Length: 325
Image 1: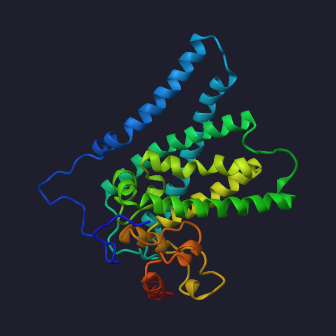
Image 2: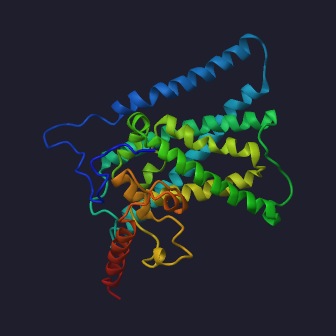
Image 3: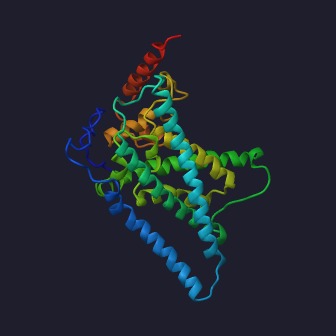
């Protein structure tokens, strides 16, 4: 798969500022948002209304229809809380507290501007509606007996439970890598994935800043996996906690791992903050989410990834040593 071309594909230098020259006003964030997101969400809404009207008009009184509305609302609110707590908490800690007192050094010198963060929040909140729609699919699949969820007992003492957590993480990691590379093909990048790459220096708010199609592609892995992998609801909870944490970490803009992390064979298989930050700058490399296996196996790590990690962590270590005792 060939990645879409961008001005920064061969360099780790930050791209030129996307801010308009002084004296010129940029379009409000809601203008592109209305063009790219609203038609898809309107379609989702009209589909739900149609099903509800048919259920009422024909007197079916299907429980799954009334329950689907409740499931959608519950999943949306739960995901909104997850997003606000994880992304908002990380932003508050790193951008407001630690950075201002000099305890952390950003990966890129120039942080994202306020309009960029507003865009990230707009698109992320919209993506949550798509996630909630997939939550309804999961519910319907469970009712139909297609998806393999099991209940009861204490799953924390069950070896299979921990196997299912690890399996779900590995399945999602493979799904993300290959779907991500597909999104970087010319047509899908221009029409879909470019929205996420408008953040050249992402913040935690960009964790779910997707086009609705991309949001669906990333969320549908749960019901697909549940067709073949029996899961306890806690399996989903543990996977989502890890997924959310890594997603926020990848867009944090700060590196959390120590300078020796990529030198050790025991830890270098795990992705770092620098890894995904470079992807936003360089576009055509560093496609992995959790682990570096796929990028290593298929030669898609940026050639300067290790050197960039050393540069960033050396700067962090220097700043820390300069702090007064």
